[in-house]
Figure 1 (tube, rainbow, N blue to C red):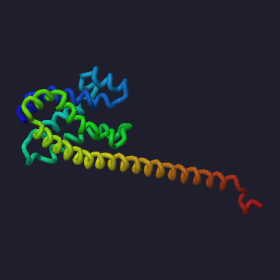
Figure 2: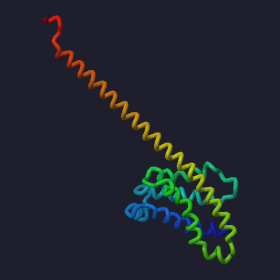
Figure 3: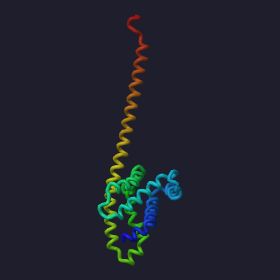
Figure 4: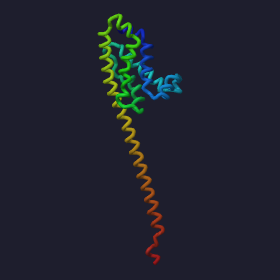
Length: 183
């Protein structure tokens, strides 16, 4: 199975990428497919880099570097965490790898009776999805922290502006009030 997955790597990654891109609105999906320049379309390049790294890590033997795998997942998830995806939509890309593998290797799996190995691979992809959920939650926490900090900064600016306005008003009010000595 590992040999087939390695041999068909580019086809599987391409199908996986297509499945991910199809989750975007039509205009965005069209742009992500069409524009291949990494400077004009950094999202495409980042997603491809992330899923290629995840795929390669998935094929490694046990004992893979979990931090490297998290870094590759983070590339894809960070993009999806800030977009208008629900958590399930943001992480569904992990499960779409199963379908990509079956589309590319379906005949080979049936002819070589690799169903048991596919089940083992499926369980590794399921474990990958759990890891992806942890990465997603970390990204969402960062997004919320950034939003809270921005609200705090805006509140502080509003209070400073209010204090300045209050000082100006008091100063102006004191200048306009007749002094008691002048009576």
